[in-house]
Image (cartoon, rainbow, N blue to C red; front, side, top):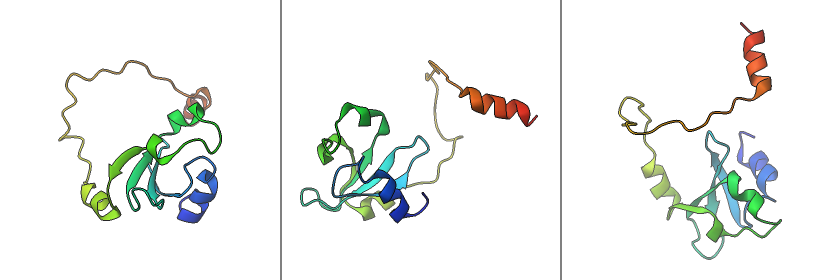
Length: 110
């Protein structure tokens, strides 16, 4: 899953045709390079949470979130994350779910 070929094999029937997965975020979403004629070379985000809203091969590039017009533009957008610089005032956690198996694993490792 850490190389483009295996990632593509995993997601090729889940992401729009003509998209190549080039990155993954911590939430399981995929950053895709678009190789379709329309918006060729643009970078999009495939959100796994909306995947179930579509039948197989129904999702198109218009259903992804646009990030950048080119790979170069995308690279220039990336910056180091510094949690001390983020202002999270006003944000509240509404709900938290913990996988029971993960919780058990944590307790077993104590």
